[in-house]
Image 1 (cartoon, rainbow, N blue to C red):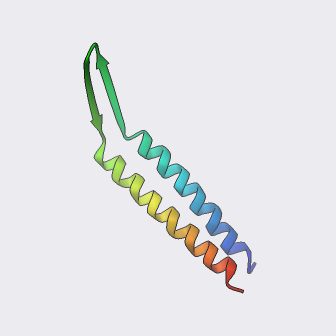
Image 2 (cartoon, rainbow, N blue to C red; image 1 turned 90 degrees about the vertical axis):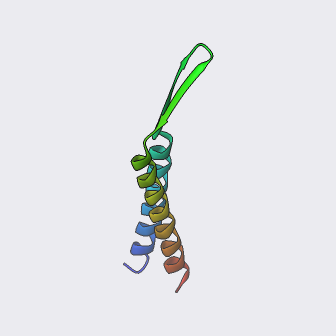
Length: 70
């Protein structure tokens, strides 16, 4: 169990990071009509994507720190 929690944190951090990047890419849309381009972004979804990325980074760093600390 000593190595189980750090590995779980690392996997959770990577998963949250990937999910955050996917959510960040899906936060906006655009429409092109000829030379005119209209774009919109969902600010709430963008903010939650940044929170997921931050949480993923924290989990990843905590997992690496716990794994390397013997």
